[in-house]
Image (cartoon, rainbow, N blue to C red; front, side):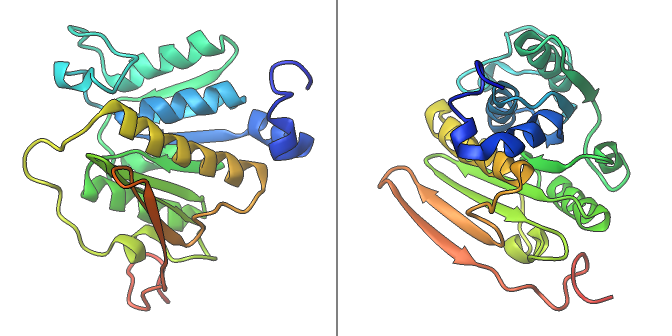
Length: 235
């Protein structure tokens, strides 16, 4: 395993790198967060992906979603799959060009980790509920302007994303977004996913870590499981 990955083996260890190279990773959402996460994971050695996004590129995406081109009317999941194969022609990539809901979340069956790069609260909760039901770790991130957050939910061990985020509504109107801030939060999210895959302790396990990139500060908040949570509470 020398050569391409020799600089990261001191971080993950040889066994961790083997896990990374054999893992199957689901990425829900191939927008600003998603394209950065997909790129980081593929470059780190992940070879098997399930990529889900039904949207097609818009011109307003192009300030941060660097793998797309104006006028391409194919679903982002399909374009993202081609991007992964350009980075690693031996990769095994499944593109899911459907919205994430209670039914289509099953596309992530068999994944070792699911990475939440969605921008819809309803879709995010459907993804969370599937993660809990299947016992698949879920790595979450969100970003608005120069503020972002990252969290990791391990079913059976930590509160789920419903406990962490509570009841939210999707924002009305366009969300402020700049590529540099999106890339920064996505980099943290990808690193947490790699830690989960490698069998290491993710820093945001069971907690929300909020980043203010304007003041270059962060805050970590540990979350208590909601006993009435419909996803991870007692049944």
